[in-house]
Image (cartoon, rainbow over the protein chains, first blue to last red):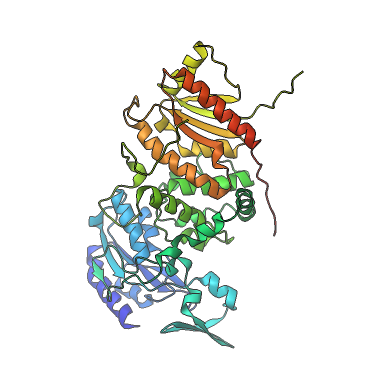
Length: 319
Length: 143
């Protein structure tokens, strides 16, 4: 166990009496796969890890445990989801114990997979700016930045925005903010019909598993979700492109002004559909129109839950 | 016989108190209007979920028009203020998905503005005719 893991372990041990359980990160089936760890008693802590492979947004579980007292280990980006949920009154701050982890980025397994066969990894470690992955017959060294998840390359919130305990020193944001909407801007260089065809092609792969929705920390409707409701019947069970596009449009619209850019939707997509782009476009619009970013300020109101009589940036068409 | 333009499928969401009244005024005053618009009466522009618009467009509508009371004149005092934010976000979002933003407009027409309603409908219908029928999505399989 590293020093940091020891500290987290110690904190959880002390807090365990105050909560029903703790959500942290645990060892997976190999060194590069980490899984969410639910700590009910001290011995569960044996499996605890905290490293560059802790990709999950643990805040995604909070929507399922609304009335319980829960402890949670969050990175900077995850903490925004916690703030947003509290802000919307969907969870109660008093029921939460939060351990914040300043984070310099997490690995994208998809990026790693493109570079090497990861089926037999025996060891993985980080040395300053490089990541070393060992398998039974080779050892590879990568630049850390080449493997980081996209969201980490423009991260502005390396230190959690909300916490009870912070493990480690505060980290100042050092990544370029301009990169944030680069994936969106590149897409917008294309013509309208190219974009139309692009999404038809990408979304054709969708198998309607709803993983993007299930993992989304902000998709709090659960069984009431309009994607599965028969009344109103927004989408049918037909497997056609219209329904698949509709799913993503619903997700994006319901997240307008609420999405905290954790990128989980794209990470979990089994068909590798670049749906995070859609969310980022929505976030860009909201930032442009309302100077607002979700999950930063506990006291703020999501922009679509409120209005100004004279909107500064909306120029309605005079017809 | 003069060549007849094929009618476009245009869906209009009109608030009960202003725009629907405005359309009625236009009718009563016998203003000539294009017939492409199918009107759906809603209690307030604030009732218009952006999904209504998206669903209409995805289901084959060539254009969608939302019209409500002028800001500050909402029958429910603030419904159209919420609508304005939502619809503006939607309008800016559609082109990212490859949908022409000109296929969707939102505007304000009061119950007394029959003349204005006539202009709005005529202009929007013309705009949609210029764009032509909406492109159909087709499944692409590269598996």
